[in-house]
Image (cartoon, rainbow, N blue to C red):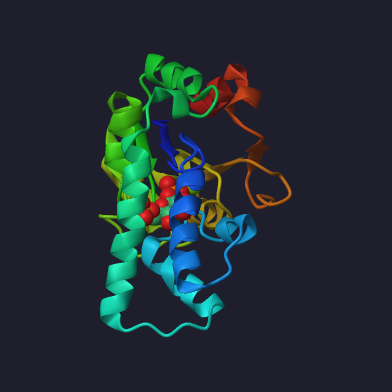
Length: 217
Ligand code: B16
Ligand code: MG
């Protein structure tokens, strides 16, 4: 059976969560809304719009549509400044080892991310060539935990969703992969990602034998 491999971007391939955090923190400080690293956890895998809605809810803050647009733009301008300086050193440990192995076995591969900045980030860190398709926040209408982003990816790869494997670091992303009937692999904390079919702390914990089994299953 033909298999497909789909990777989330932020938190799986690169650690951009820290830049999202810094950009949101700056805006939150400016608005006088408390915002911590723990609050930032709830922004993982969540669209920019939804993140701002949450921030304003937490701060009990009413915004006009114009302010809302301006703050989203401001956060993104800040974020773009950080990612502009990114290079291959920011790829998470052992990601290339897994990508190379899959490529060697001619596996179809895609990125499935909520981010509208996915393509420039992949270019910056030099990983674009591994992926046949990048499905990102510019192409989806329903955010994770809706399976849309992964279903579009499977469709583009020409692989039955049940034969797709998803690597995700966010709870919403694991839910999305499960809803798409894909094999979900959590990257991170097993207690947080308890609904995943498999969980690894990071890619250094993934044995190539395990990937070989996924390919042959
Ligand atoms: P942007 P992923 C997600 O990417 C991030 O985890 C999330 O924190 C962010 O708000 C979202 O992208 C939108 O990003 O503002 O760049 O469009 O994890 O789905 O790759
Ligand atoms: Mg993520």
